[in-house]
Length: 207
Image 1 (cartoon, helix red, strand yellow):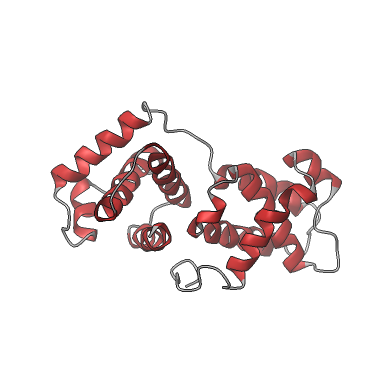
Image 2 (cartoon, rainbow, N blue to C red):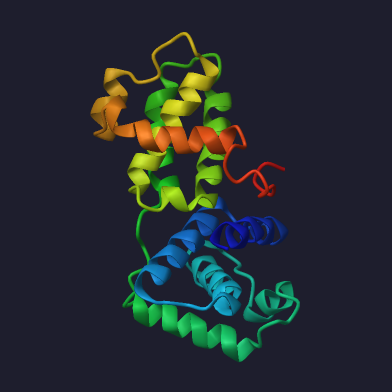
């Protein structure tokens, strides 16, 4: 259910032309809220749009308004319900909304990794962004710190682009704080997503 929700939210972010930070913040808020509160499945989409409303206000210059988020759910929820859920999320988080996401670390790690890739810097950056968005879909990635996911994404992207070269340089190990062996479990999950062995039915990121 979480995967279906995130897949749909990727579509919403595309529809409203939201920046990628808004999407990552949205998914982070959903996971944080669910770690604190039990929620029935009928209210999962409400949590999703309310989280995106908060993330939009945090990240966007011109965030969509509440009515637009009601409209995108085909008016399944009233404005009052979205605003009430927004308040519940904010209270649950004690208004602490600025947590780093995968995207936060990915930007920094990409700059270091690109130093080894003169010919394909953009390719590395875009593949990294794609793999990171795939990681949002899988519940198996929730247990990892955002920094570990970002490091695993860079490891896998480097390997895909230059398979004959070891993907983890001493500079990357020093900068990220992770040895290659620390990344194995996370890299394998993201690789399965990349190969469509996991989350194959969730197509929005792939499209």
